[in-house]
Length: 390
Image 1 (tube, rainbow, N blue to C red):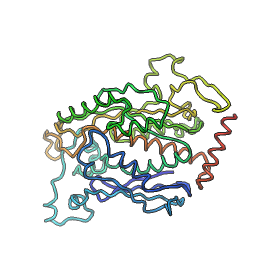
Image 2: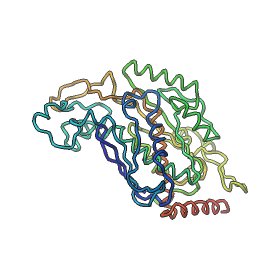
Image 3: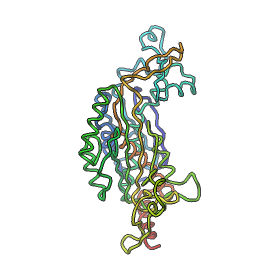
Image 4: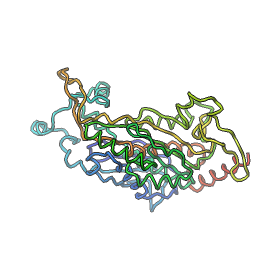
């Protein structure tokens, strides 16, 4: 299974095409729209979220509510396009029209892709870079991830993301036994945090950053329950599932670190406080008495819940801009300002859900016969029983 996205932040639409879904899987646009709406929520979001109300159109690969096995094509229109038709239009401009278009952006913003992308592709107008490197692209990544989450849910696998930390304020609720409860509580929280007291402090920190023209980052966690043991591989480095998930998390805009289970704390603990003892019973089969390794051993799932964390840096577009250099004059200037959020950590947890779900779904489709959804579901159930009796 694979997908590709296309489109610019202020272009007419964002598009993704997914190849490799099994035929006969139930899928509705509303399944995807729920996650698109979740991505747009969250305390600290900017004005763009008031303009765009993202809705997906399924324009290929589904008939009468079920996938066909052919490529799935999804489109999300940019409602703001009508204000950008001259600036972002596809057709060449005549001289008069060129004068109407806003000036070129020649001042790269620190922390963005502007300067590096300009040097790589030879763009003297940084808008050619920032329009694609924008986090707006995660809209259709969430759409693709929502399709993956739908597949997983139908196979008895649940995925949820939540916020552990914003601006140095940490949630004190880090233990949870009921993933459905995690979903319920975090959906009601403006910052997707399980700890209501910490959530209040997080919102105050976001307000303070906004007043100061600044931004703050944080840490999100994705939990996945119901994953069978043995997804991934110990045989080849590039088929280790935890490595693929780590890559997926790092591919999200502004993410700079990944941890599984205890993560970097493992460096400060003895092995007896890191590794998970193995047990067995008739009902569960094999399980671990603890889950410090976050559901992975040897690049493969253990059957325990997956726990993966990602750290998001503060958004680099600041209303008290940092210094930069104009690429035309080489003079120092304040960096240009695009419309921005003061904190996007809550919505980033939804994006993290999507990319993790995609990698797990893809691993399942690689490992099991998957041309037909009913055959896939039967194969997963039979494999679970074999593992229990091993």
